[in-house]
Amino acid sequence: MVHTDVADVLIAGAGPVGLTAAVELRRLGATCRLVDRLPARLPYAKAVGIQPRTLEIWDRMGLVRAALEAAVPMRGQLTYINGAEQARLDLALPPEVPYGFAALPQYETERILEEFLTRFGTGIERGTELVSFAQDADGVTSRLVTPSGEEEVRSRFLVGCDGAHSVVRRELGLTFEGGAFPEEYMLADVEVDWDLPRGYGVRAMHHGADGAVDDLLVCIPLPGERRYRMSMLVPPELSASRQAGGGDRRRDGVAHGLEGGPTPSLSDIQAVLDRLAPQPTTASAMRWSSVFRISHRLVDRYGDGRVFVAGDAAHIHPPTGAQGMNTGIQDAYNLAWKLALAAQGAAHPRLLTSYDAERRPVGEEVVGRTVRHAAEGVQADPTDPATLLLREAQLLVGYRGSPIVGRPYPSRDNGPGPQPGDRAPDCGGLTGEITEYPLRLYDLLRDRGHLLLLYGNGDAGKTFDELATVARELSQDKVEACAVPADGEPAGTRLPVYHDGRGEFRQRYGVQDPTAFVVRADGYLGARLSPPTAHELAAHLAGVFRTG
Image (cartoon, rainbow, N blue to C red; front, side, top):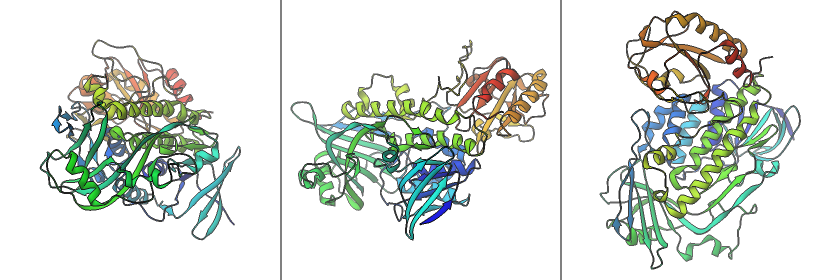
């Protein structure tokens, strides 16, 4: 057996979640090794919905352009019950949200992330499977089976992004409580010749005499001419559970994901379209098909010691609303910056425990919501439509009350603005001292770690410089700083300056008086201080960074 001392972090699983973790670790200066048991990327359009929050994350990482050019817009959903069209759902978000909903096949998402990762000199080690590990006070020793034999590797941390049947979760002894839906579904990637509006998903249902859904067709648009990823109920002759004699063939008892056995034919797909399609149509050019099962489960904790789980290894649930992959990407995004600081000796000793504190409640909410929506439909949600869309877009995910964010800030007459733990909203109309064209706030956040954002009038410049020095010294140079002068006044500071030309920053951040915002590496507010003082700033940073 080969023995190797490797990177700061070993990541098992190179799907969208593992790739996100690897990109962020490398972008923030940590080293990693990314392994996957599959010999090549799977050509299946499994997870296809891309939420606006994920596009914001990709913007911050520096790869959103490639995703936008490869994706297609998701403009809404057309719903039909027993052939009758229902109210159309349009996916309209407030104008200050920079991105809309999109659809992109999972293999394209993985391609874009993998190509971006290669810029940092890191690639996927294919055909390499993690089979066991042991951790101690200083690191993790993992055993890998590679194409050339067994290898024992040493890393500071291990992250399991290895899916619903996670080896990391099993070896770590995490529980994975929940259940499975009795229904089985067909998935297929096909083209059709109907003339329904482009960019709209289709949900067609048949209700039986008892009012229950007894037939179902869900179509999500994909890049291409009238191309869709379709899902529908499985006919008895293709049932994987019947093929297996009614039992669960998974050795871990988790019935979730693509099944083996007979695959649906184009005629199977056409039969459902003949029954449920809103217009007569013919399916063609089927790229792949499969039978799949759905479970809903959640781990009891997102990590233990130096080992963590993310994505499907931590939570699985119905694909309603395209929440699964996007939630997993946010898991990885939340964890990676904390691991990067820990690997570089710059993290507070308790920083990594905040991963479970912040992300497990999100996983619990998503599992519960998608199970409800799968049973009752999104339209049955009592939330008002605007809030419902923001939540489905994952723009309401937040970490108020987290052990590493500051205390709430009192509301002002011109609006409360974001609180510590909230997503930092975007705004436009910022101009630099040299550039005349307007910038977005997200332009300032792109490809950075933490940012100290200081707002105030001209006489606050000296205080701003002092705060920036405190932040830089206490964070081991991990916090950058810039200033937004109030009402176009001279800045009076040595920091980079961006003027709030249209007043959007003042309005959306709810500021009147001098204020300091600590924007974390994942785009959430760590603290909001008004008036900002060196003492309060140091107290906040001392809970995130190793300051001693």
